[in-house]
Image (cartoon, rainbow, N blue to C red; front, side, top):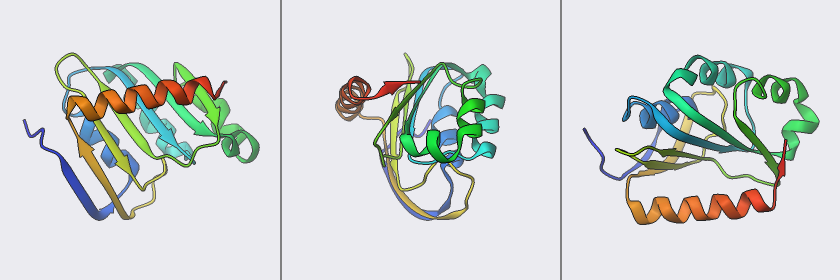
Length: 144
């Protein structure tokens, strides 16, 4: 299994990046997704993959609650936790006993195939930093 750090600049979308991380494990203990925007199609793919994810947390921008209320209501049926805050972060964190990984990316949680850039790492110290930062982010967010 390839667990090397990777930097990328190619035509892709956020789902491909999420799927890259999920494919490394049989079942993810925790999956956290941060995004400014979430498309309904992305949410439906998450719903289809829920059997592979024990606990799903979404960290989303307040804009979703204002402009895309129906998506937010649908996401309530998909995620275990949703936090709203002022964020423009695009990040995926996979936590599992065997493999943990983080992807920092330019792509929002939409299904648009565009040139996107990002970085994927499986290094424990980077993952621990992201976990700590996400916990701080949750303290300043509103749980939906």
